[in-house]
Image (cartoon, rainbow, N blue to C red; front, side, top):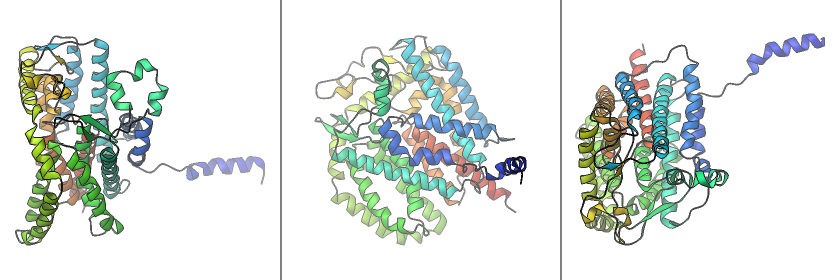
Length: 452
């Protein structure tokens, strides 16, 4: 065969030899590589990087469909953009910081909203044949394992921290930025005086202790679904030690929001079991409930709960901050908010409203913090808040009667989100996980309806 014929044969064979990356590979790289992203300081930015190939996959499609109620979400995104015009506007009871820092956090949050939108459409538009739901759920279950062991590391080695590769590479003027430093500097725990003395609160592999609690709760339903299913194999036996590992940082996290959501999750599971199997299932649930209660009573949890509720220094501060947040929004920019958070001017005039030697964490946080709901209210106003909430309520109502296991798992996340948004800043990986769940729910129900 001549050299020309060989070249022609190879050229013709190249399309057949070219290997396409499997659908969902950005999610696999993101989640399976998460410990590496934590070490390198890329934990937060890995989500942004993963969104790039997902966005490209969507743009490469002939048609991209959206779930019902998506118009509410698009309206919210539009309000987010328009609210950026208010970044330099004065808000009642607050001080306006430098435009550079304000613009940085505004762009960062806008980026997150775009990232979670992309993953919702990506998962929903990729067929279950190309991207099986079981594969996605296993990835999220793996993240529960990573989060559980990261939390345990925070309990056993609470002072362990180090400079990440990104932190070393960046100029000191950049890495020293307070906001950016918290994102790129790996640490196993936040040391806080919640109980009147130094107490570690696990955070690895995330930036904040509350983020750790929110993420653990969002990954938990997928872990239970994946590792305790009938066909889980070896994972069914390994699941119990992993839950035991997770229980240690849950107890020592002093995270009331996490504790409350776990109780709500247990009640949700009971309701769903009774709905599917009838009240006869109560006989099966009773011994399981008894084991859980006895285990909890024998653990340090009751003592930790007692001490935590005896030192509720943040309750008054949170309550008044929420009231002032709404009041400032209504007085200053009720429709579209102020685009971003603002520092509070002065304090609330009470001991709970300022830092003390025994409780430096008691300082008044900025408006738009201490809960995602308050961020949306202050940053995007009442119009943005209505659009934001409407999207999730529409999705919940759309699926609430479903008996599909994947959908019922996702419904648990919506319930968790609606509760945690009152106390957690869930804009980030928790909202990313929720959008994956919504994509799976929407796709599952749509494919079931289209099946012959």
